Length: 115
Image 1 (cartoon, helix red, strand yellow):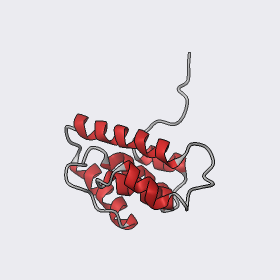
Image 2 (image 1 turned 90 degrees about the vertical axis):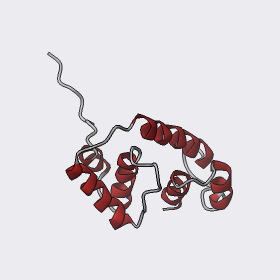
Image 3 (image 1 turned 30 degrees about the horizontal axis):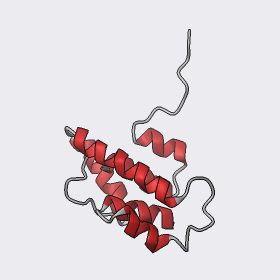
Image 4 (image 1 turned 90 degrees about the horizontal axis):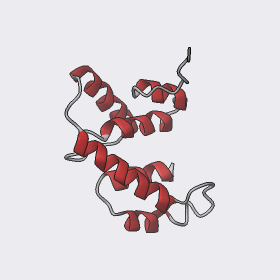
């Protein structure tokens, strides 16, 4: 849960350094990549999503708004593009299986059939 909270903090405008400091004792034994690595990577990815964003259908936007609302997450100003990725994290945090959350976000997680 604290990794999710840290992601939301950075998405909402807090610096990675400040966020890592805030959660460092809670994630000291985090397996895999450390929190700083995760947050810097996500910050750059989410920022790029916002830069590339040109809009989305109203129906999809309502779905994203609903997911974030259920998770208690507010969309910061200027973060509409990256809201799709954050909705995926919210879905998983709310208990959806990751494959279902990926599919709902419009990501194809099944290998393409060849031939």
